[in-house]
Image: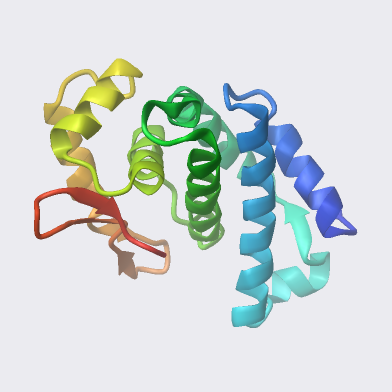
Length: 185
């Protein structure tokens, strides 16, 4: 376990974990800050766990490495978004950082997502409501999925994600116009 005295130390460590991804530098920096902000907001809305009281507010567990590996795996999708394929770069970076902050909160609650699920959420968060065809085309182009049929299963999984405490949460929703969007967590 890695412990940090300050939020800035934690942010630097998270950014270092993301350094091996294909993410643009601005996206890595924004994502690291969003993860730290997410941890901070979790603390203010809920009591600190006994574990956090023992080790301190700013820490990374051994199993958090898996989160950064998954996040790194969707780097090509993030890079596509951040270079303007879906949004202008500043908006894409902000949207991607926002979804990663939410995913980090889920991770800390012990929910784990696959790289493909994370890619779907990242695209929907960054690009806003998107048609299934547009979403499939982007994910196929970036080799996240191999054919459009795989997307339906991913969307179904993301409509009912089970957390380790047994509760479930919907991470995507179909709009009245048939577009898919990420649900605010």
